[in-house]
Image (cartoon, rainbow, N blue to C red; front, side, top):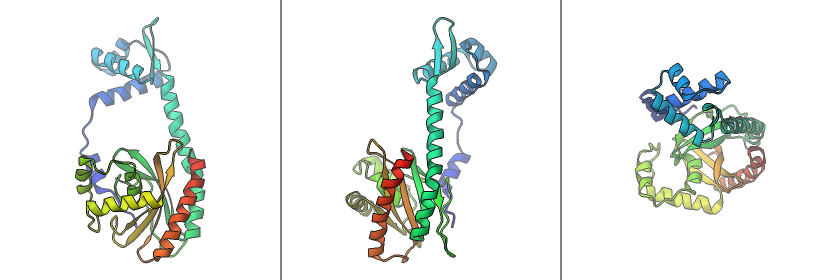
Length: 261
């Protein structure tokens, strides 16, 4: 069963191009492909960007350490910060791939679908890896699927690091389309329980007939950037079995943290 994020697709279709961001990316691409330092005026002329706008963007990129500026030659080049940023992204991707066999082993052992979620922005999470159980009837969760950060069992874990009394939280919560109605008061209580026992559960609120149990993967700074979720059909485990699964996920997350960080 593939569950798509319709709201994200609609946003993408109606997305408005932010010109300064687009120009900044064009400048970085130009400097990367050219391979040699260039003056601001030359970059502006080649890319068809207003000279003053190009200069301001370059100054900002220098401050962000992704572009270097030589006061002697008055020329700009790709900065070491951009290389470090790319290296970090590649490294994280490799680490996620290294975790894939561990997810597959866990899915086989627990006979459920296992997903690895990552926080991609302050308000969104995404599946970066998924492993289905080797059974005749199984649940498929597509990699790349995005959800509001509060949604699902993983959402309750990310919510433990959010100010639940923030007035903006209520408006964000109300925008979520739950398959099974859930009040903000009940949600807050479930977040509190998740923080206390170390794992969270979504019982059919994310998708009808589906139950998920999730545990957090803590970073060295003790923040939650990844979670691991076990997805199954409702009624597939009794209360005791769900508690055992929660504990198993906590142990697994402690192990896989060594791979991801």
